[in-house]
Structures are given as structure tokens and as C-alpha cells.
Length: 600
Image 1 (cartoon, one colour):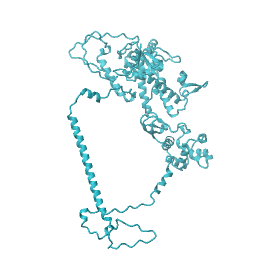
Image 2 (cartoon, one colour):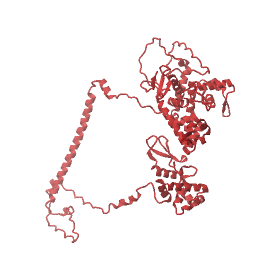
Image 3 (cartoon, rainbow, N blue to C red):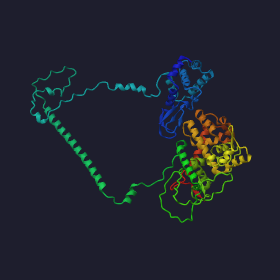
Image 4 (cartoon, rainbow, N blue to C red):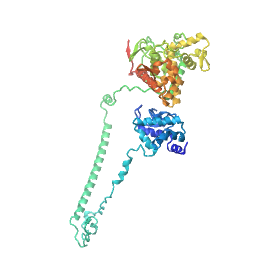
């Protein structure tokens, strides 16, 4: 590298080049965020060659859509190429880049060709400003710099103020002052000299003073009295206002209330349904949810009869009216045991499932389980919705997200099987993924025997007994167990990927974890942030072969391969529609909560 390029690197570091490009293309780092809409300061992310919103981490890439977008070549070399092409010897820019910047000849030729093509199209508005910046001809961010030197020309000649008149004595004492000597009156009334003739000789000391001068003293004294009187009147008005306010306050405190009920109805505003709460990011409430889950599990372990509580319709118990409290969905109230009381006989246990798995907890919502709930164009039986919501409460996941994933994966069919893979059940688990989640989370949810049957060979999960293996795989068709393990897997992988990326995930990115697996989803998202134009089918050939409608599109009779950014947008759009569709299932307890339309 040449000495000139080293000096250029010192003058234009990589971060300064990124900031200059952001300033030229977007006007700076302070703007309204296009994602959250709030005034934000975008913080630099040099490794990603972009700036992120300090509220929602939305990324803006200043070089997007330009030849400078490629991260294989630093912005310093791009800026240096712009500088070389702006010099008189622009034809030798390729040779200069190769010799001074240390670029290969093909790479240097590509830089020059792309910058030349960018300028031949008419060129964007920021390219001339960038050329002026790197050549040192001007500062592009100051548009009115040429106007600033004109401002000091305004005050050409200072205008002298007339000297302040000497303080006048009070009119009482002025009668005793001799009026003959005019010495103190001469500076008060200076006479302007004539420009063509010399100034006249001063008036003799015996000259009489002007007749209007004595009248000025009484006028100023009179105006002084008026000012003092005005100030006094203002003070009196302020004091009267303060006294009036204090008196009114005392009268209001002493007055007894006329009608308490009528006043409370006027003062207290009518209660309205609050807007729907935004979905919480799992990483922000992970500890709270885990603590609530452990408390609920502790209560169930110490009193197993709670899981078999049933409504007693015939028992003539005295109903005591109490105020219903709105409790979070992840809190379980355990009634205290009365000392000395005889414990009630345990309710008979429900029938065990054919797989030996524990039965789900009692139904939370009241109503006919065969009722049809309508969510836009989708109609679902109530018992299936209750099953998914119960699973989300046990794990501490968002029920709306679980409903959206089940809609996209199986359209709420519990026994459906994919034609192009081994995916089966409500959440379309493939065999290895299903064995893996039971191996990790099965014992936590009562599947201890099934967990012991699964072994691990390298990265593969195996079951030696073929009949037991098939029985475990058939459990994918049980909606409660499938929803439990889907929620556990999404929660685990979402938290891990958020920590790896340093930001929150969108709904579409969370579904990508279930669709591609955690490792492939992380590769996909990182590639989308760095090189959004890469073909998604080339990055993930196996998922593209099994899901062609997602990775390919028909464009005028020809098959077009979508880029990773286009696939990312497609996932976000289709999950957002479903999250909005099933937003009513998030609050499932309490009165006054919006619920889906019921249909028999």
C-alpha cells in the first residue's frame, strides 16, 4: 500500500465512511423510525454496515441498493476509488487502485466499472457530494456555507446613542436652584454642526436658557408618580387575587357534599376496554414465567387432588358474594387447608391415555367443547382452542403464536401427515425433532418412561425397540402433548437466537425456527442481514426442495428463485395475518374481554 492510501485511511476510517454515507443518503442518524414511528437516534453497527434504532433495533443500511453494499470490500477502498476517478488521471484508476490500495486487478476493475455505470445513469444525488467529500473540495452536509460570510456585513457603522440626561432634582427642591448658569444643560441639547461651515462659537455664559427646558422637569416627575401609582395598583390586584383564591378554597373545603353518588358518577369516567396488550418478548419475562410455573408445580405436587377438581352442581353450599379479581393467566391460586378438618376423598382419576402420558389439566373456559369458534375464515372446535391455550399457560408461551403456527402448519388437523417429509400432527414435527423434544422436555411434563427409551448416537436420537419408537412417534397426533412440546421448543430456541443476534425476533422469525430448525434459522437471518440478495434456495437447498411454493414463484411462465430478503418478508407477512386473526385468545379469563364469535 502506498503512503497516500495510508493517509487516506487515517482521514477516512471505516466508521467515518459509514457515517458519511448515512448522512449523505438519509440526512443523518436522527429521524423518525420507519418501523416503530418514534423519533429515534440510530446507533452505528459497523460489522453489519448499518445503523439500528435505539427503540426497536430496526436496521437501516446506508449502502443498500448501491455497489457499495458488498461487504467484501471495505468502504475505505470504495471512497478511495471515488477519489481516484475524480482526479484528472481517472483513466489510470484501475492501476492506481491495484498499486496503492492493494486490490487485485479484477476487483479494482469491477469497482471502477460499477462506479462508472452508477455515474452514467444520471447518478444519484449523493454521488457528487461524496466526490466533493473525498477530494476535499467542500463539506456536503452544510448546504448554506457560502451564505454565512455575508452576515458580518450588516453592522457597517455603529449608531451612537445620545448621552443619558443627568438625573433631575425633585420639583420641590428645584425652586431653590439658580437658573442662570446653563452649564448642566449644554450636554443635554447638543446642536448638530453644519457640514459646510465651521462650528459656531459657543454661547456666552450670560445667555439665558431656553424657555422649554424648565418644563421638562415637572413632566418627568409627573410620569414618575404615574409609574409608582401603576406599580402599587398592580401589587394590590395580585394580593386581592391571592386572597380571593384562598377564600374560595376554604369555602370549598367547608361545604358538605350534597350527593355522593351523583358526584362520583360525574367525576369518575366510564370504564372502557383497554387496548390489546402487545405480545411480550420471551427474554424479558423469562424469569417471571419460570417462577410462576415452579410455584404452580409445587402446589400440584403437594396437593394432587387439585388436578381433578370438578364442578359440584348438586351440593347446596352457601354462596358468599366476593369481588372477582383479574389475575394473570400464569398464576394459580391454591386454597389453604383448614386445620383439623377431615380431608375429602380423592376424586377418581381420569382414564389414562393409550400412550401412558398424563391427562391435561381441567378445562379453563366454560362452555360446550363442541361449540365452533370463528376466527375470520377459520372455524375451530372450542376444545382444540382450549387445549392449545392450556399448553401455553403451562409452558409460559404466547397462545396467539401457538395458534398461528398450528394454523400455518396443519390448519388445526391433528392427524395430518406431509407428503414430502415425515412431518405429522398439529405442529408437523418430523421424527428427529419430535424425539429430540421428548428427550429434552418429556420428563418435565410426565413422559418419564418415554424419555428413558430414547438414546442419543452422535446428533441422532434413536429408540432400539421399533414398537416403542412407533408409539412415541404416534404421540404427535395428541394435540395437548404436541402443543406443550412445540411451546417448549419455540421458547428455548427464541431465547437462544435473541441472545445470539442481540435483538428481539419478529413473529415471522420465530416461526422460521419451527420451520427450519434453530441452526438453519440463525444462518438464514444472519445471511439476510449481511447479504439480502442471496438466493434462498441456494442457501437452504433441502427445505427449498420440500417447500417449493415458499422459495420459488411463478413469474410470467418462468420459475423465479426468491432471495432471502423476499422469503423473510413472506414469512413475516403470513404470520402477521395469523397473529392478528387469533389475537382474541390471548386473554382467556375475566369479564369484558373480547372473544371470538361463537357459532353452533
